[in-house]
Image (tube, rainbow, N blue to C red):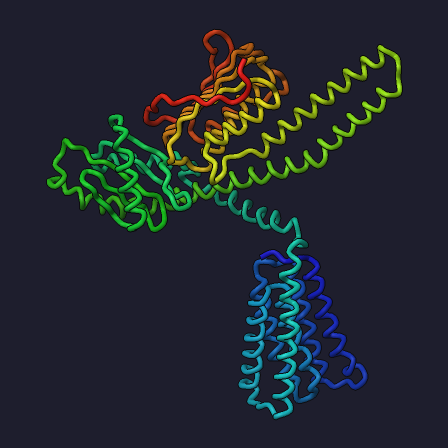
Length: 525
């Protein structure tokens, strides 16, 4: 739960004001029971304020305990001074400020329970006047609580910007502290591969695959096959995996079967070998035993998938933040320098100086173009509705338009999607390869081929430029591409293009893909 800092200050000021209102009669006419009740309220509200400021996760518990204690204290001091009932308005109000409408309800219920419990423990009963006072001040507290809840909903823009980072920091530290106990690591591909290896060891299967949920659909993460499956087998696999996902149990369709590792988790699908007697081997019972044994293996796999999704979300948000800052800061500042240079050009008639100013203006224009390309690079990403091929086509179009280098994109991809983190890393590799070809290779044409048959992928970027050059001291592109490929268990291949130039390919092994039709992006030479 994240609470705006101004609301925390309002809650603290409200408690302080309540103490002043209650303290005024005690100063003029000190009476011990009333002072004792006042001191008890001061202690409760001080502790509640400190807890609100420093322990965000316990906000609801603090709200309930504060209301419960205030109700009990009011009953204890009621015989001495009916004015102590004023304190009943504060817990609902602060609960509304900090927790919203549900906090108001929780505070009123807890406060009432505190009143009733104190009356029972002290063996007291309320007079008519006292009961009316409790009812009146509780209703007043309800009204103020609704006002507080309104303020809680109307000030979301003032949420402490650092609070999510502090919370994430605590969680990441905890993750690091327990990472030493993760025997199998957090690599989804490796974990999925080990699960399929166990399936192959236990059952006479010719091919097997592990599917993971992606929204309402299933995505194949890893496949294993003794022989290359026919293209028409894939829809049958998808169908039996989908049926097992919906039924959350073992599903058999001829030689094919599928089952979830656990409720809501990954799906194992496989095709039994035709060379063995399924009935004689008791395959059905062995499938059930295997599923029970693999149930715990779903926990490490789900953890690894969550970690990969977190990593992808964090980097995506950071790229967007950097793009906003570059657009609003660096890009605008550089553009303003161009206007200053234009002004200088109008104030001189010296040909040599005019030539130098023109060179400076061209250089500024080139830098502005680089910044704009960087902004497109940062903001373009594979989304929920845009496929990997579509995202590569989009970035290729932008690069071609900004550089004038024709980029021809060849796409062949099925409707099945890869995991978001895998698509994200493959996209960044292709993007880096195209950007390097545009900026450093002096290429006159670039050929991009993207073939996706999940979980198999091959993306190739070939140019007709200068080929592999000696690495620059400040160049990190190649090492970053290799690192991204390792993250998704892909193979990065770099070699010469026939006829000159450089070819960069990233491959995740899988089924062979058919030859696609070609789409051209950019100007033709």
